[in-house]
Image 1 (cartoon, rainbow, N blue to C red):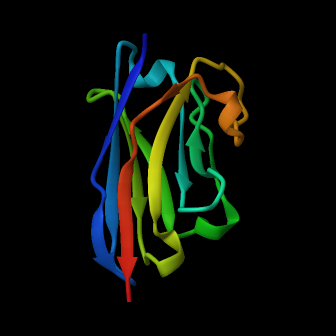
Image 2: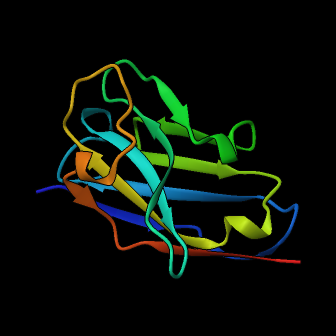
Length: 126
């Protein structure tokens, strides 16, 4: 069993930064491919950023390219999502998801992930 716990969400103003954390337990972070998804009210869950298990490749949604950065801390079994220059449209519940895929490609669809955290709310105000 793999557990993922997100933290770091909050209420910020447009242009601010936040760093989300996803602690992976029951598995080492380096053994999991991890992705961040988000879901706003009334909208489908969408891919934000992901990092592969072994090759440490990363991928980002076009809407967050060059503003968000995903990284992992092997010693802390944690994957981070650094979010800069936040916009109103970034408001959503952010989820981290994991799987044991060994692909060099980042999965961008929710159904590609077996494990999910409970989510952390990010609200960006003007």
